[in-house]
Image (cartoon, rainbow, N blue to C red; front, side, top):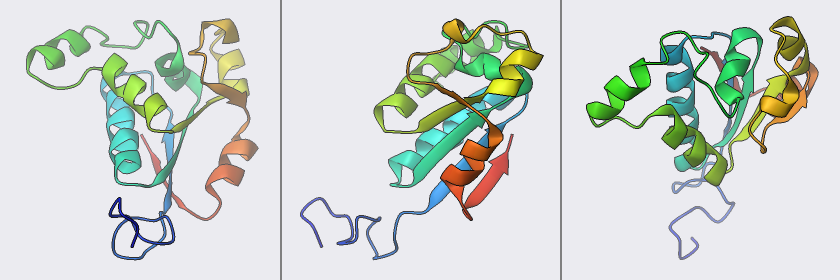
Length: 141
């Protein structure tokens, strides 16, 4: 076992290889976008490879200014209660290697200009997402 406590094969301690998790964000509501980033950051922190794919109104969560999400004012309320807000979670995801992809068709459907996206976000189609996750678990939020 390496000195960092991980398994020799690069997976989490215990010998199992790090599993991939796909997170599919469809909704334009703050609570769903927030929880997509909660799940993505937690899985990545546990050593899983994570691919977050946003489409339709969910694309708003990957914009630099995400305040067009429904119930965006919820973020201030949850931060006041000691819960990480969307900016904190998105930054954490970027820092720990969550691959973030926004659906090209979803951007068009919602008339979102790709120049509004975070710099680390890829624009691609659902085939790219499915290829990236392979046979791994995908959750839809």
